[in-house]
Amino acid sequence: DGFTWLDMNEHGRAVFSCYSLGCIEQSFEMIRSCHCDGIIGFSLGAAVLAACLCHPVFGPELRARLRFVGFFSGFVPADPRMRKWIDASAPVDGLPSFRCLGNSDNIITPDRSEALASCFRGAAMCRHDGGHVVPASVRKEFKAFIAELP
Image (tube, rainbow, N blue to C red; front, side, top):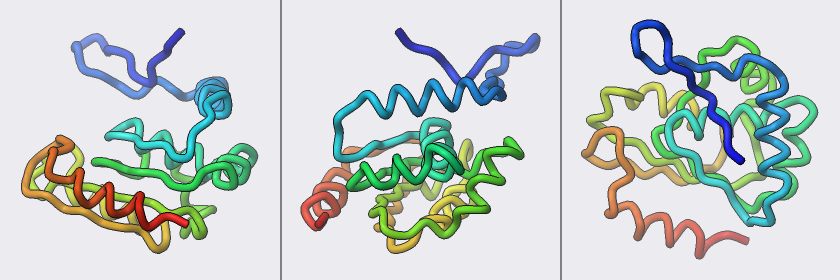
């Protein structure tokens, strides 16, 4: 079973629809049910991951379980509630994070990705010349990041 954080508006544009705590609880429960060392999010997935990591109730447990997180073309959510969670928790310390952004990304501009990156201390940063993509060239840097984890 899956769900989405996006719906289509009357103009055919995708809009963020996860405004109830139930969406965050459902996201957290899905993450909690996984047995993994880390979580990687792209774009909106990275934004929701950051919000879950900073949630006042769920965040501490999630941060304690994980060895790392990866944010690819991530950003601080515009949703005021999620932004408040991130602002209250930042800078997050003790959770290694890998951030990747495209210098030519015109969907999530580099300054938006950098704003999210500044909310997590001691992170590896990878920049590429592409846009809103995860290029194959980042593989080498990501593998090096994983190899250096405690």
